[in-house]
Image 1 (cartoon, rainbow, N blue to C red):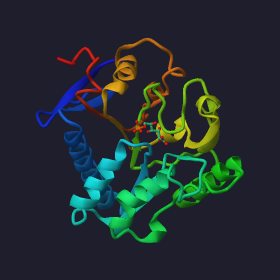
Image 2 (cartoon, rainbow, N blue to C red; image 1 turned 90 degrees about the horizontal axis):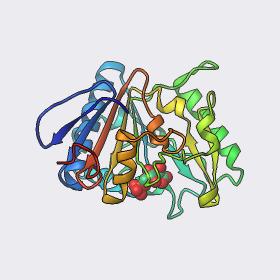
Image 3 (cartoon, helix red, strand yellow; image 1 turned 60 degrees about the vertical axis):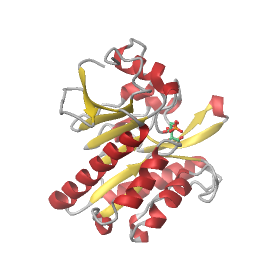
Amino acid sequence: MCGYKVREWPGGDVMSAAAEVRRATTPQDLFQAAGEEIIRAANDAVAQRGRFTIALSGGSTPKNLYTLIAANASATLPWDQMFFFWGDERHVPLDDADSNYRMAKESLLSKAPIPPANIFPVPAENPDVSAAAEAYEQTIRKFFGLKPGEFPRFDLILLGMGPDGHTAGLFPETQALQEKSRLVVANWVEKLKTSRITFTLPVLNAARCVAFLVSGIDKAPALHEIFEGNAPGDKYPSKLVHPSEGRLIWFVDRAAASELSIAA
Ligand code: 6PG
């Protein structure tokens, strides 16, 4: 990734061509910064287009962000005009402890006045994982009114990153990285011996804004590789996320950014 600069949080403003990196001193500052960005983006989208479409990420990192938003933002968000999707889901029932939907429901969705019709979980309870992915793709095509070959333009897609550089259900050297036309696929992940139901790269790169949330020292080597390394994208899939007509924001904390040349 060429040309990135850093915005210290709390602190001054800096933008760049490829990516905006917002480095937070603590994880709590990180969630505060991301929360404020979501509030700003939601109100902007509703003011301009009458609705805000957001795809939530799973894993452990965003849970504190969702909790913070539920606790602090209830009055400042246009909940009626907000529409919730998931960038990826584990192939488990929605009430399973591993479900990304369940995590979001418990930390945010059940605590905010969101109309149930505005929430679109992945139908991951379907034992046929490919059918679940296909069904979710049809849900998204219908919601956005897409013609064949068109991709949805989410207002905001939240992503995490694994220590191996994976994001959403897009793991290193997996089939889904080659997908050019589907919106959602079932991606077999050999090292996990399971499939993830995941947005494809064309969907991520069609978004108005993609925001990564990366916290912790275990993410530092991959973050270094993504910003300053030469490894190919299929080895570090987060490298392949570049919205073609949108913003790319990396919310990182000091620990995660500790191997970047700007670490000082
Ligand atoms: C998931 C995610 C996945 C996650 C990363 C980071 O379903 O697990 O979508 O891509 O964002 O694995 O996970 P942590 O936040 O738990 O480190």
